[in-house]
Length: 205
Image (spheres, rainbow, N blue to C red):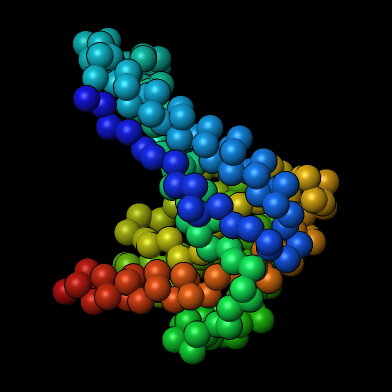
């Protein structure tokens, strides 16, 4: 039986400050679920693909594997994204703030670079923990399956595709970036960072 990815309805946030429920519904139900649906379709067809016709210019296997990565990352990144948002206005834990200040100089410099990266890229801005060097970095991606650093752990993804804000702000991305930062669930960020730092201790040995 083919592997399947389950949609995680419990991750859909509600009552955010500056990001409407209508925007979230559109984003969650059409885009996130769309990636999951296509990923499951690919997984259902992969076992029967003709491997003897694999070719780097074009083949069914090549196209399926390319789109598998795109839809897998689209599914995973959106789950991280929705989980990262909360209406509860959580404070930044001391451990997270300390790491941010260590790696970016100050919280204000981090926010400025994070939002600027969200402005400069077409798809995503990511706060990641680099297991190669044991530090936080901000990377940008034009599509789900590009712009990553190997051996890095996702800490905070920022979706800057138009579908993430167009219902609320039209073509204006800047107010959406402000709204996103107001709704970050810092408790979730703290949990991810703690896990990443533990992994780094093992990874660097």
